[in-house]
Image (cartoon, rainbow, N blue to C red; front, side, top):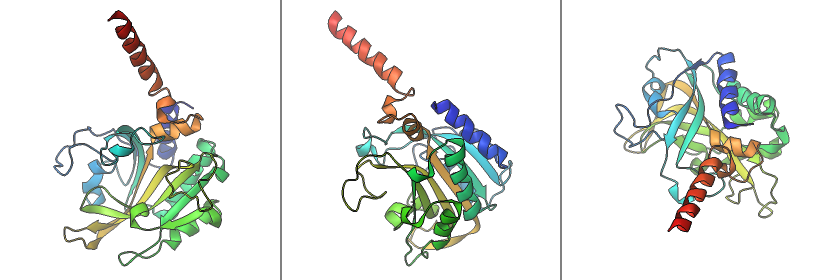
Length: 266
């Protein structure tokens, strides 16, 4: 399945589920001095996550151009990129965990035809700021993920915030099992061995992180999700990395040929 097909399937699926398709915002943020580039699909929507009314309603979906440098040291492995497209859907005070999880499960297993046995999920383990997310785990069980493929991690893994302050909350992440041999007896989605690749992240955004490090409740509960288009494309195509897909390989091959010809000419 080519990346353009995946993108089309995603937008049509969420449009069918009541979401309005909105355009990608500019890569250079407008009216936002907190970042140099748009790094996540939720950034252009921050005013609406905080409670302002969006002109297109409470259910939105899009693909957002993103540029991210915070994990630049990992770029070039089998899953990290600097520039990428993020597929996303949002609930602005509309549906919450159960509907979000069911739609995610249905899209992965029915639209993309990913075998349920290849999917593992992670949930927030809880701390002094927010309780353990047992509800999310129970929603995954109801959707079809067995308990042995549901993991709980802390803020480093299962809490999303775009910057130092702003809207945030516990998240649940979906991982694709590549079929590679486990790195050890405790191999699981938190490993960096490459067996498990994160494909989607659903954030249950109901908190605001203040400048003093404390958290306060938002006036509405939101859902903010993100799926890397290049990442899901290489997995569905059975490739080793995003650079092996039609999004990168033709350009890289052309650059290689031009480079070789230039060396011959000189």
